[in-house]
Every structure is written in C-alpha cells, then in structure tokens.
Length: 79
Image 1 (spheres, helix red, strand yellow):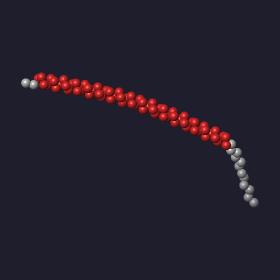
Image 2 (cartoon, helix red, strand yellow):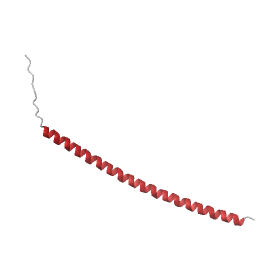
Image 3 (cartoon, helix red, strand yellow):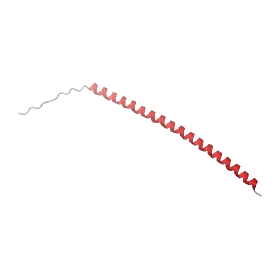
Image 4 (cartoon, one colour):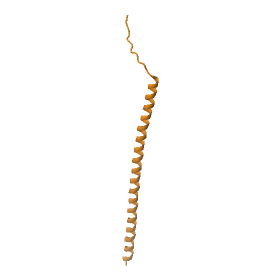
C-alpha cells in the first residue's frame, strides 16, 4: 500500500487580498513616477525646440536684412 505525504498549506484569503492591493499600489506609484519623469523630459525638449526655432527665425531675419542691404547697394552702384 502506498502512502501519500501531504503538505498542508494554509492560505489566508486576507493575506492574498492585502498582497494584491500592495502590488497594485506599488505598480501605480512606479508608473506615475515614470510618467512624471517622461512629462518633465518632454517639457524640457519642447523648450529646447522653441529656443532653437527662435534662433533660426532670428538668423533668417538677419539674412533677409543683409540681402536687402546688399540689393540696395547693388541698385545704387549700377550705371
């Protein structure tokens, strides 16, 4: 006759529920922290883009002004 050894494991349903709630809260906090860091980085990149675009517009304005001055000089120097 074979005897089977049984390992008795008592599971407390409240402990499982508590672990699930803890895992949910921990996941939520980690995810919200990650999202916050991403939003901050996006904001920094947007500011950099605006600054760079402003610089490009400033250079374009200078270019147009120099072209206008150059064209005015060429018109006055023609015979």
